[in-house]
Amino acid sequence: MTHSLAAARTDGGNSRRAGAQIPGSRSRHPDLLSPASTRAGVAAAPPALPPVLKTRDATMGFGLKTVLSSVTLEFRRGTINAIIGPTGCGKSTLLRAFNRMNDRSPTFWRRGSVEFEGCDVSAGTPDPLELRRRVGMVFQRPNPFPMSIRDNVVAGVRAHRLAPRRELAAVAERHLRQVGLWDAVADRLDDSPFRLSGGQQQLLCLARALAVEPDVLLLDEPTSSLDPATTEIVEALLRTLTPRLTLVLVTHNLAQAGRVAGTTAFLYDGRLVEAGETRQILAAPREPETVSYVTGRIG
Amino acid sequence: MLRGRITAEQVTRGTLRALASIPLAALAALVVILLVQALPAVRYNGLGFFTHDAWLPGSFYADPVTTHGVSHPPGASYGALPLIAGTLESSLLAMVLAVPVGIGTAMLVVEKLPARLSSAAGFFLEVLAGVPSVVYGLWGALTLGPWLARHVSPVIAAHAPDLPILRFFRGATGAGEGLFAAGVVLGIMILPIIAATTRDLLRQVPRQTVEGALALGLTDAESMRMVGFPWVRTGVLGAAVLGLGRALGETMALAMVSGTVLGASPHNFYDTFTTIAATIVSQLDSSLTDGTGFAMHTMAELALVLLAITLLVNVLARVIIHSVSGTALPVGRGV
Ligand SMILES: Nc1ncnc2c1ncn2[C@@H]1O[C@H](COP(=O)(O)OP(=O)(O)OP(=O)(O)O)[C@@H](O)[C@H]1O
Ligand SMILES: [Mg+2]
Image 1 (cartoon, chains in turn red, blue):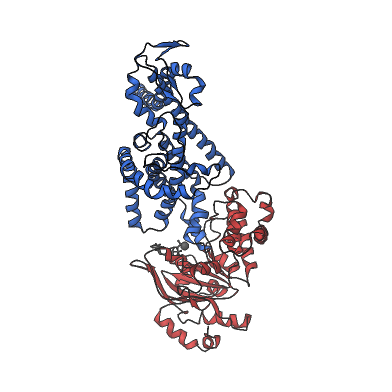
Image 2: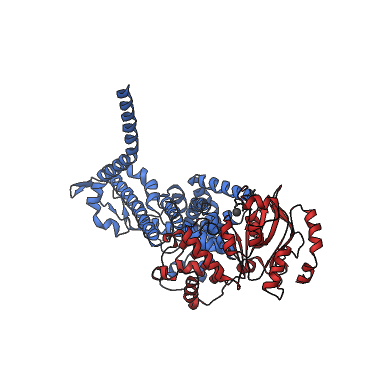
């Protein structure tokens, strides 16, 4: 990664021009989230780390349909980043581009680049399996596997042979503790996960995703099927995961973005309208569409 | 008006109830008739029916004799042990071959084939399931059996070690009719049942669960094995029992491929043998010539034994399915 913040800092004029090319977008330039967030980033973490995830002019879709147009965005290591936008605007598609889950659809296509640690995710290094180990995903609805609670946690560890068999129990315990589920399930590790509550199931899925020691966690509306109390638990947990992990969180809940995410990107109709520090996006959005969305007039 | 409607509803309900009870009534009638028909044979043959090999209808032309109040040709002595053993052995072999291949085929069709090929494969499975068993039998007797005897049996026989159970696989390999060929033909016959059912079950595995596995970096095969298959396990068990039921009762193909040897159990894996169903169909004609009717009574007793085995298998399957679904996991609605 050679893109430096120096380039970003001196780029104030360019971003205006870029904004003209894609009306309403301030983040067209690859190195810019937005001038505001860049400055904030410099203040908070002086040594400029290269972004972990990054898209440049990424345009993608299914068959004849273009879902995302020319999205340029980056996520820095150890940050929590929200993606917001009305339903159908392409949030999930963007998220799933990072771990190549879109590739499962035979009609999926993409132009531009989507990078993990400086390499295009489709380049083959790391291979898709390793990519998905390092870029984990948590889904909207809890999706435990049909196996015991303990086996659920270590399913990925087993498949990737990350720990010898005799250590699996310890790995399971560690990650169940990490998500705060240990006390609730310690005496029924061999039971089915389907008797757990929805919130507990989602925590289990989080434990499962964390057990393979990923660098990035993609979360697609992870709390939308949970009650407020459990949502709070999950949010608190997410905050503990940084700075070791980088999180990208799709959410319909603006308050949630405000509570946990350092940066927020607003997608509208397949375009990245605005991205920057969450506080700014929610309190002082620059683009009219963002204003309408955060004040509840669209979406 | 109201009265008319109530009666109409009562009539409908009564009709439906009557229709619903037809299967039960049919089964009851079947069992009763078989029991009545088999009773003289049960009394004369006794428990020895299940323990010895002989199959001697006796002399139909001599004067009948009466034992325990049952009239029968002199010298009649029936033992069903080889038939029961042959039925179970050939079905077991069919299961051993068809279950793994069927499940593998289903996984391949669901997970690896593109949609168009997958539906073509499905079409062939259904065609295969619909082929009349006499066609399988003819093919087994004329083509597959001799081919196995020439190319496969000698290899197995030569490599099987001289150990207690494995000794069964050694020895003379015959000309093609026998246990091995029959098991393979049966296996091919029940393969489509198992494959098609498993395929339908696998298609019901929730997408998000499979995606969860893939998103964890599991391969398609791993996700199928770890996530997809457990989901459908009980259903697949049901499919296997369905196949087993068909194998146990299969008649025509076995009558053609087994070699139909009465009165002796197969000596080895390749030896000629027979099953209950094949015996009933092959001995029916000659049994009718027994003036005392005793041979027919024995046929009824055989049918009763086959029915009992089939019922037992079904009950056993239910027990297993129940215990499996009790231990953990979401249970496919397969059965
Ligand atoms: N596999 C697919 N094949 C075809 N079209 C798809 C596929 N996946 C998504 N789409 C289309 O892409 C568009 C964006 O979908 P996406 O799921 O990314 O939206 P989203 O922003 O996540 O919406 P939501 O908030 O409702 O989850 C939709 O119009 C959808 O119909
Ligand atoms: Mg979505």
